[in-house]
Amino acid sequence: MAIDQLKERLKFEKNKSNKEKLSNNSSKILTVKEKVIEEIKKIYDPEIPVNIYELGLIYDIIIDEVNNVKIDMTLTSPNCPVAESLPNEVKNSIKEIKEIKDVDLNLVWDPPWNKDMMSEAAKLELNI
Image 1 (cartoon, rainbow, N blue to C red):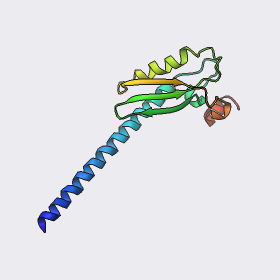
Image 2: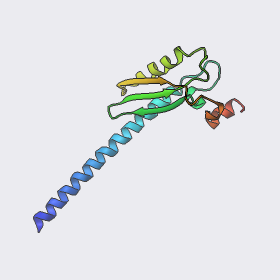
Image 3: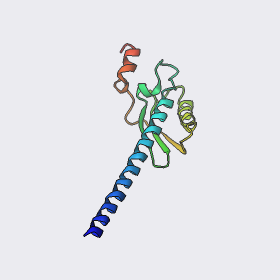
Image 4: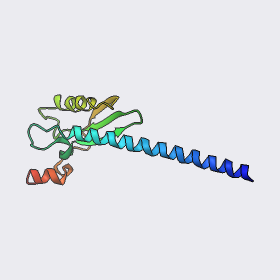
């Protein structure tokens, strides 16, 4: 009976250890995602005095287990004068984060950006 209890205890400890490892990896990814968002918040649309994150130009940020980042972003308009430079600025800025392995940035137009995508803070800043 004692051997069976010991086996059960070892099985429990192994499962607990695996859950802790998963939890630690999840919080690590969250920390990296926070760093990515903070970096993005440093970048402003040159025509609007609000950062591109608060403007709602960043649609999705996905970070995998080895810290590859995939970003879907848009611009306020396809005719935006910074259509070439702004996505590169975002990509290069994120690559500067030491934990980041690689960045895949997709410029998307669907759904089209509109003022409803802005955060409340951006709307207040622009008196909207």
